[in-house]
Image (cartoon, one colour):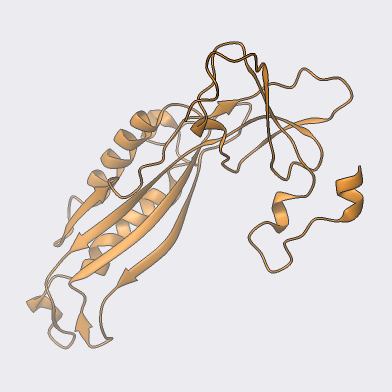
Length: 210
């Protein structure tokens, strides 16, 4: 969306739990799935099938380390401002029973980008999975099509005296709002991200008053 392109607005404040500090920016993000397609068989005769789980494991092991591998060795980039790119294998689904060689496996992964563009990250991820699965029997692929939201790191304004400043790792609505050149973008609010999405998620009245 676009905020009143021709209007006189010069500042936008995005509300997030920033511990009442001004945020200098946040990491980018993208998501993807790793899919493995094999062939079912009785587990007593595994050589008659192709295990999707055995195929997806080396791919996920490589994906899990991409933020720790130097770019020169095929890893994802880091930055002095945001630290390393991190990946989270959030869900894994596979198989139907312990006595059946699994014909299908799927994992869903979230990436928090410290540097670079989503397009560059996608190519790095594709190459890493391809390299890790050259010798597996089942087919393994990377699918970005079910994760439409993606963006690079977002640098924000902090030119207000009297506030502590910090970068954050979580995503916000900042990249979803188009503003004209020169409009200031601040990320600020009470509360802590460390209790967000948890059972004890809350704001204190004191934080709100401050």
